[in-house]
Image: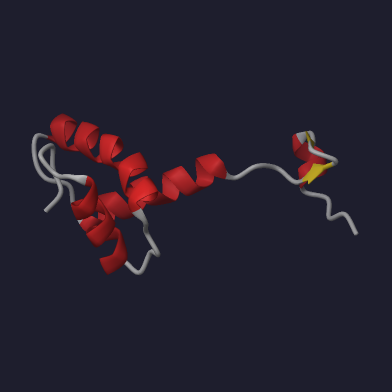
Length: 82
């Protein structure tokens, strides 16, 4: 069970049980979000909710394709550069 009193190790362990290669930095990054969600829902969060938080974090870190370190416009990001 993950809730407002959970620590980084509990988050890392739960992620690993989901098959995610988690380390302390990932656990720490998600811990704040886990605590906020647990307080908002007034209960411990489920593994499914943790999975959603993880997926949301991965999506937010995704960047469009870049060329020479510059971000491309959204329409160009869909183009494949060879």
